Length: 495
Image 1 (tube, one colour):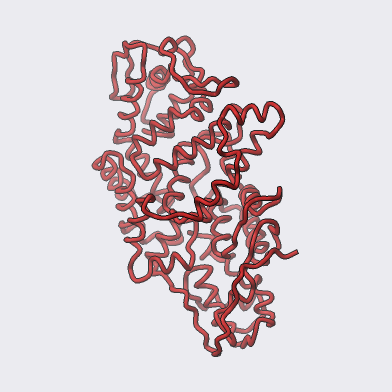
Image 2 (cartoon, one colour; image 1 turned 45 degrees about the vertical axis):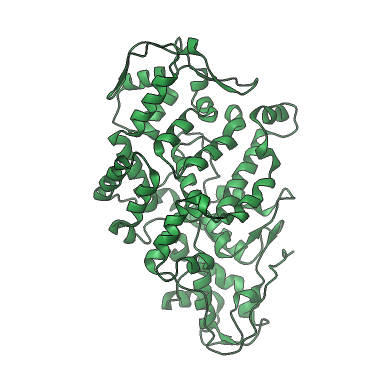
C-alpha cells in the first residue's frame, strides 16, 4: 500500500535541457541552515538567497516575530500532553494510559515540531538545552512533569542562561529526577547539587566534594508531593541552615527560608567564568567541531559574560566566526537529526496520528533504530555530542534502511503523505543528468557534482545523457532509488 501523494505534479514544459528553479545557497548559508535547522529545504534556500542568511538568522533569534502556523497546528494532536501531572498519574494508576505512552506522545510531538516549525533556530536551541539540562522521559516519578519541563526550556532557550538555569534546576521534573524533591537538612541528597556543578555550570574538575555538600544543602527545602498531588512547594523546616561556601559563593544562610540563598547561588553559578567556558565549549562541540578551537571558546565565553548570560549574542558571535565558516562536514548528524532531516529533505507530510503505527510514531521509533531513542537514557549527561558516538556500522546500516524506506515510500504508510514521483521532475523531457541536478538542489540544497552524478548513475543504471520523455520512464517511477542514493552520501549524513 502506497500512502496518498501530495496534490501536486510536475510541470509539462518542454526542453531537453530543463533546469531546476531551486536556488543553491552559498556554502556559508548552507552551513548555517544545516547547523541551526532540522535540515535545509528549498523554501529555506529561497529565504537565505541573495546574501540574506544573517538577516534570516537574526529574525530567528526573536521567535515571537516568526509566524508558526504549522508548528502551532500540532498542539491538538496529542491531547494527553495538555493534562496536569496529577491527571496523568491518576490515569496511569487506574490503567487508562501508561506514562510511557504519554512520553511517546511527547517524543513524537518534539520531533514533529522540529519537522514542521518555522521557528527552526528555537527548536534547535531547545534540543541543545534539553540535552544539556537533561531529564529523561523514561521514569514513573518524573514523567508527570516532563512535558512541562520541555516547554519551560523552549520558552527560555533564546533568552538568558541565568533564567533558564534557575527554571530548569528548580523545576519539579529535575527535582524529582535527581532526588532533590525529598532532600532535607537531616538527609541531604547530593545528586542535584553535584550535577548542577558538573553538568549544568562550572564543569568537571572545577569543584570539590565540600562544594558538592554545600551545593546540596543550599537546594534543600524544595519539595514535590510525589504520588499524591504532584505539586511543587517549599518547606522551610527542611532547609539546611548554616554557613555555606561553593567556590566563591558564600552565605551565612541563617534564614530557615532558603529560597533567596538558592536564587543567589544559581545566579552566581550562571555568571561564573567556568560556566561561560563550559557552555561555550559545548556550543562549539555541537555547532562547529569536536576538535574545539580554544580561541573561539574564549571569545564566546567573553560574549556570554559581557551580555549577562544572554544566549543570542553568543550565537551571533559563533556563526560569524572563521572556525564556524570553515567547519562544513565536521559534524555528523545524530539519529534524531538524521530522521527529521530525511523527512524534510523528502518533503514528507506527517498527518495527525490517528493510528498506532502513524508516521509520527515511526519517526520516534526510527531514532531508536539509529541508536538513540529520544531522551531515553537514564544517565544525567544526555545524548553524546561527539561524532564517534554516531559513526558505528550499526548506525550506518540503520540510516541506509531509513533512507531507502522513506525515499521509496515503503514505510511508514499510515497518517503520512509522500510526494508523487512525477512531482520531483521540473519538466519533461529532461535528461537524467539534469534531473539529478534538480534532485541535488531539492534534497541536498547543492548543485550536482561529477561524484554525485556518478553515484546516481551507478545506483540506477541510467546514463546521464538519457532523455526522460514523460512520467512513465523508470527514472521517474523508480525515483526512490535516486533519492536514496543521494541521501546516503556524506552531503546528507553530515550537517
